Amino acid sequence: MNRFTLPTRRPSRPVSARLGAATIALATATTLAACGGNSGGAGAGSASAEGTLTFAYDADAAPTGYDPLQYSQGQFTFFSALYDALFVTTADGTVEPSLVTEFSNNPENTQTTLTLREGVTFTDGSALDAELVKANLDRRSDPELEAYGALAPGQASEITDVTVQDPRTVVITWAQPQAAPENNLVDTAGVIVGRDGIADPSTLETAPDGSGAYTLDTGATTRASTYTLDKNPDAWNADQWGYDTIVFDVITDPQALANAVVSGQADVATVLDPTTIDLVEERQSTVSVGGTIVGFPIIDKTGASNPAFASEQVRLAMIHATDREALVDDLHDGSRPTSQLFPEEAPGFDPALDEEFGYDPDRARELLAEAGYADGVDVNLTYLGQPDEDAIAIQSQWAEVGIRLNFTAATSTDQVFAAVRTDPVIFGPFTVGANPAGFVAGVLYGGFMNMQEATEPEIEAPLGAALGATGDAQEQALTDLNRAITANGWFVPVYEDFVYAGYNAESVAAPSFAGTNAYLVLSEIQPAS
Image (cartoon, rainbow, N blue to C red; front, side, top):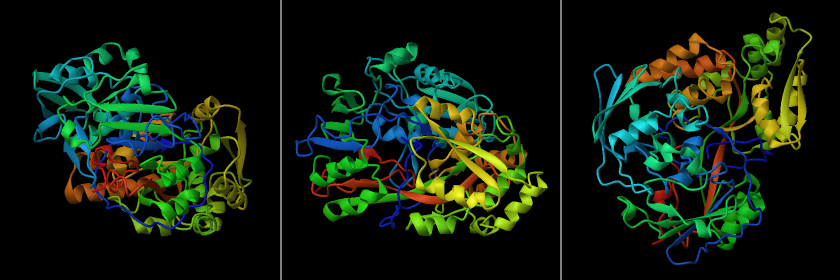
C-alpha cells in the first residue's frame, strides 16, 4: 500500500535505477497500515509452478478485508487483480481509461462526462452500468474510505453531484474546476465495486466483489499470510494478464523477504529493506523508484494539542534546525536531502527551496524567540518499539536550538494510530509520487495530516489552481504550492528516499513501478522471455 508506517528506518544505499518521472496518479493517501503476517514466508504458491506468479509482500495485503476503498493508492498493486478502476496508472506514469472508454470536460472544467465500457461483469454477477458507478461514488462522504479523501465534501477535488445520463454515461460535477479529472479517479480511488458489495459493504470484509481479471481462491487463502488469486478467463481484460494464478505471500521480516526472492521462492518481492538490497542484487535483480519523502508532517497547526504549534515561526524553526545533509551522510548514502515535500522528479519541484529553508540553527533560534519561545519548546512523538536512528539523530540536532523532542513509547498499534490526533507531529516515509498536488489534496490538506482541519489561504489558492489548470499555468501553480507548504511550516522534510523491489530475472521480466509512484503495476509483470 502507499505506506505510512512507523518503521525502524535503516540506512539507505545508492540508487541503481530511477524510473522515469511522469505526471499523474491520484493522491497517494498514505495509510496508517496495521501490518501483520508471517515472518517466515511460507506460501501456497511456488515460483516454479507453471502459470503462477509468486509475489512476496512486506505487509498484509488486506488487513481490514477486501473493500479496496478503505485503502490508499499504493495498495492498488494487490487490488488491481481483483478490481478494475475507471482509470489506471501505466508503467510510464500516464493515466489511461480502463472501465471508461471516453471522457470529456465542459468548457469550465466543472463537469466530466464518462462513457463506460460494455461487457464488464462482477463477481456477484452484476454488470457495469452508470447506476453502479454512481452508487460507488456516492460513498465518497464515508470517512472510513481512505481512497475518497480528496473527493469528499470540503476537499480539493470534491464531487458535488453524480448524475446518470443513460446506462453507459455518467456526469460528474466538481466543486472546483478539475482540468485533469482522470487523476482524481485513477487506481484505488477509481475502483468500482459490484452491486452486492455496494449494497452491503460488510460482505467485503470476507470476500471481494470486483470485475478484475482474477478472483480470490478462498480455499487457498489465509488472511495476513497468503492470498491466492485465480484468473477469470471471462474477464474483459483477462488476456492482458500473464499468469493463471497470482499468489501474494505476506513476509514482514525484512531478511526473510529478501531471502524469498534470492532463493527463488518468490518471483517478485517488495518493498525491500535497504539493508538487504545488496544481498538481493548479488543473486537476483532489483528495480527502484524515488518519490518517497521522509519527514515530519505537522499534524497540529492550530495549537490544539500543543499551543506552540499554532505559531508558524515554531514550525519553521523545526525546518531550519534539521541538518539533513549530515543525517544523509551518516545514515542514508544515496538518499537526497530535501527541504520540500515535492520529489525531485515531480512537477513544481524548486531547488531554491532547499537553499532557502536549509539548515540554519541561528535562524531557528531567532524564530523561536520571535514566537515567544526563547526557552525552547517540547515536541512529543509516539513510537511503537524504539525510536529509529533518524529520529534520535534529529532529536540531538533540535536540542541544540531548544526544541526538545520527547519520545513516548506506545504499548499497541492502536495507541500509535491514536497519536495522529494527539501528537503535534508524526514521522515516517510518505509516498508523494509524481502527483504531489493529489497528495496535498487527499492527505496533507484534506486527510489525516490535517486532523484539526486547519486552513491556510496561501496553500488553498495554488492547490485549487494546480487542480484546475494544465500546462504552464499548472506548473506555476505547483511551484507556488510547493513553496507555500514549506513557507507555512506544514511539513518538515528530511530526505527523499527510494523504494526497491527485487525480482528473479530467470522467471519474470523486469517489473515496473507506476511511473514515480512507489507501487508496481501488477498487470505489467510478465514471464521472462
